Length: 136
Image 1 (tube, one colour):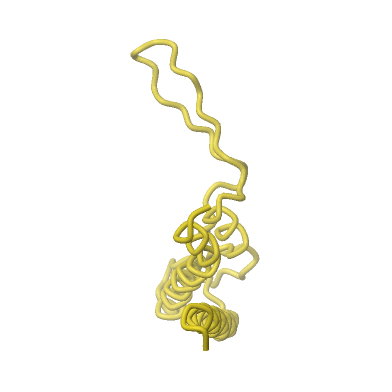
Image 2 (cartoon, rainbow, N blue to C red; image 1 turned 180 degrees about the horizontal axis):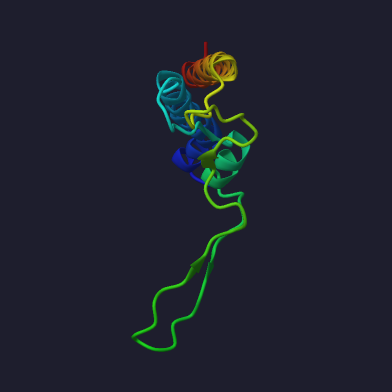
């Protein structure tokens, strides 16, 4: 295994985690901003599922064989599909909005803390790598 590949494998989980946490932050922000929008349905990211997909640990999709040139391509996605979806279990108000502002703000804070923890861990990993390279 060459060094760049080893580094890529070492940093891939943190890189994926940071990207997904940023994406989730955007979704939670959109929910908070639209808390008073009639008909708005709250969305969220299933972080564990998305991380498994990003790291290639999710079940792979099945592709059907086309035996005729006019066949449509078939792709059977694994059960569960996308990691982004409408939040389930939130009460829907009379105006059709399903945003629970308290829940969204709590999830926003929790996601922010996890994002900062991932950044701190990444910084520590980079420092230890630099220390190994420079011998300090």
